[in-house]
Image (cartoon, rainbow, N blue to C red; front, side, top):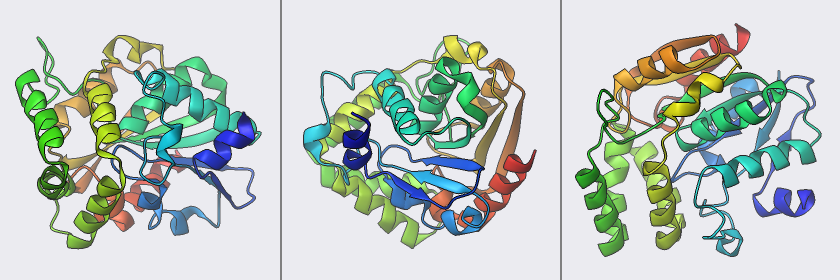
Length: 266
């Protein structure tokens, strides 16, 4: 199982340091999203990269629509990857969707994680009574409809909104990896993410966390970072990046790397 999974999701194990850093990408990207971050940490860490099974860089035959109905199956994959590589302890950097996968993994196996760094994280994207996730149910249904009706047009509209900052190369890169995803898988994963609600388990986290949020993110309101800080069970700090958008590793890698370095040294 371990070797098959490592090959299926294109696991890369770089470097030989005793300090292990896991970089986990979010929805719509693949491990290439970290390409401008890796050089900052390669001299000091053994870095583990992989693709989520839903990524366009993974053979779609591996995506089991019956299995990946919740985040738990993705957590299983993450833990199986780390076990297959013999990882006993690591620092974990998760973007968006993978931030929540990291939270769930740390609840199951707290001894495995020395720190969680959560970029653009949200325990629930939908608004609720006394909770502002950023989206109403009707808005989300319109997104799903747009994806179904014309995936190419949806990507062309969504990518610049998500990137936020005026960085054309980042928009092109995000568009490329979104287009690489099979549209039915992309829609299915999107539904899974937007229907998730992890608010009830945040208090079970005991691992120290650092929330990294940009000054303006169309996907995650600033209030969500504060919600995470007050509800996560472990010691939690917030870093606000002086840039816009949901994908700072694409649009502002040098700025993000400085914050990651600071968070990892604490």
